[in-house]
Amino acid sequence: MKERNPPHIALAHAYWRAHLSAGDIAIDATCGNGYDTLALAKLLLNHPDSLILGFDIQSSALEKTDSLLKQALTEEHLERVLFHRRCHSEIDQIPLPLPPKLIVYNLGYLPGADKSITTMTPSTLSSLEKAITLLTPEQGALSITCYPGHPEGKKEEDAVLEWAEKLPSERWQVCHHRWLNRGASPSLLWIRSTA
Ligand SMILES: C[S@@+](CC[C@H](N)C(=O)[O-])C[C@H]1O[C@@H](n2cnc3c(N)ncnc32)[C@H](O)[C@@H]1O
Image: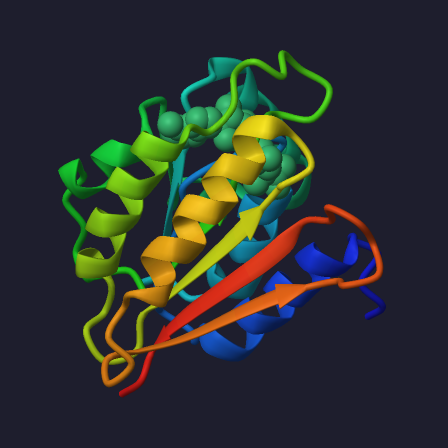
C-alpha cells in the first residue's frame, strides 16, 4: 500500500517493517497522536506474544492514541498495548517478558497542542542511554525522528547525533537520514545492532 506519511515517517515505518517479526515487543517512547503506535500495532499485534509499551508525559496524547487505536484494533489487540503516562527517561522501570526489539522516538511537541511541552535534551539522552541497554542483545534497534526546525529540537538533534556518533561501530550500525534540499527538515536516525 502507498505510504501517505511525510518522508521521514515513511522511511522510519519501512525500517520497522523490515526489522520486526511476529512475537516481538516494541516501545513507542513518544505516543503523541498515536500514528506511530498504530503502525507498530499493525505490524505486531496479530501475534499473541507481541506487546507494545507506549509512553507520553501528556494524558491528552495518550487519550488521542487510545482513541485512534480503538478505531482500528480489536479488544484483544488493545489489551496488548500498555500505556504509561510518565517520562521516557523511566523506560527501564517497566518489567517486560522479553527485551524489546525496537524502541521508537518521534521527538518534539504534540502537533496541534502546547508547543512548550516538548521533548528535552537531558531526558531524551537519559532515555536513550537506558533504551540501548534494554534492547534484544543481538537484534535490537532504535528509531529516532528529530525536528531541528525549532530551537529545542535543533539542540536536541545535535546532542542525539553527538551521542550516536560515539556508539561503538563493532556493536552498532548508525545511519542518519536527512533531506538535503528541504531546509531544517526532520531527520531520521536508525541505530541497529551489528549482530
Ligand atoms: C512529535 S510528538 C510524537 C508523535 C507521535 N509519535 C505520533 O505518531 O503522533 C512528541 C510527543 O512526545 C511527548 N513527550 C515530550 N516529552 C516527553 C517525555 N519526556 N517522555 C515521553 N513523552 C514525551 C509529547 O507530549 C508529544 O506528545
